[in-house]
Image 1: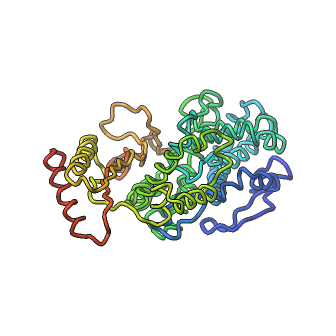
Image 2 (image 1 turned 90 degrees about the horizontal axis):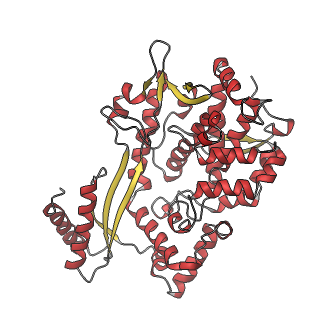
Image 3 (image 1 turned 120 degrees about the vertical axis):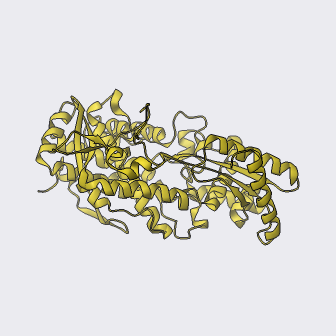
Amino acid sequence: MSPPFPSEHDYPSNRIRCPIHGFIRFSDNERKIIDHRLFRRLNRIRQLALSDLVYPGATHTRFEHSIGVMEVATQAYDSLIRNPKHKRKMKSVFKIVTGFEKKPIEKARQVVRLAALLHDIGHAPFGHAAEKVYFENMPGEHEALGAEILKEDIGSLIDGLYWPGCARTVAFIIQGDPSHAIPQFKILCDLISGEMDSDRTDYLLRDSYHCGVECGRFDYRRMLQCLEIREPESGTLEIALNRDGIHTFEALILGRYHMNISVYSHRIRRIYDYYLKEYHRELGSDCPQDKNGILEQDDITMMSRIMGDAKEGSSQWAKRILNRKHHRMVFDTSFNADLIQLNTAESTCDRLCGEFNDIDFVYDPIPSASIHKQPKKGDHNEKDLQPLFVTSEERPDRYISQVSPIINGMPREFSCARIYADIDPLNKNLREEITKRAIKIFREEGAA
């Protein structure tokens, strides 16, 4: 059965080659969005900031990732509507939404593709590394800016290509919580930013490929084939999984955990994220902190500025980035550090600063990174969780953690703290001395 298209201009007559998904097809209408300057800007923003200083192949961009997310989201949506029961249910719910009375399945599919394609359009240079500085004076972060761009900058283009109000609907889905506006589209939000969404599926696969590691790869095609639909309350649908797909979700969660350890929180990548943040903070009022200022910049323009400041000697952070002269890690906690251990690591760093007062130290508390949001046995508060249900015709729906000992045993967050010292990498004796002292202090503080 051919996928549904809202009009003849939405037939996927164009294609682009992707190392992860093969040929990705898109329509003439979508091409006009892809060719827009604000989307093309993503071709100049790397997916993993300065991670190529650790993994030389990690030079891939938000542009290719966004197109990949559109492909995965489309495969997921098409997998759902291939089931006649699911298609009927989705049609009956979607057609309640204003503007979706006619061709609800076709329009919802197009909205999912657009939301997936544009979900990262609000990213600042270097992605997550420096966004805390870029968005200090703006409510929300890149998702909020992306929604604003959709409404104010390319909304008229999208509405003209599709139908009035299309851009605003896409913006609601990108922000991830349409319950206050379009509760019927919760299932579409799940496909873009849920527990097994298209975004994390693509970036795990793509980041693994370009970094040359295997830990983020999993059988995502099987996972998409095992998607189901639940109706927790009248007029609201959500994504579920049948029992044949449990192992694929387990692999996704394990992939997230291992990629956090080996790539996203790699010790050298983290110190360069710190330099980027400090460099942008050092810029003060010269650092763009409004929509227009952010959209005028990308990795290339900001890296050019970093290179200039490094050569002029006006920024120590710029010099470190350009010359790859970084602090060396001398201590770290476990990968599942609790609050006591994190606080003790900070006090350990303070004591090291006092004892080695001629050495510059950096304390890096890795913020709690979400691995999953599944309720687990013994939980009493399910606030902020996103339960994924396993459906079966033989028995009532159950949390996936109730049927998967792997998910029930996996930590929900990854947390760690590290201490870095500005020492000569060839001075191994000094580094070993500081590390031994840090371990002793940490134990004295009672957090071992």
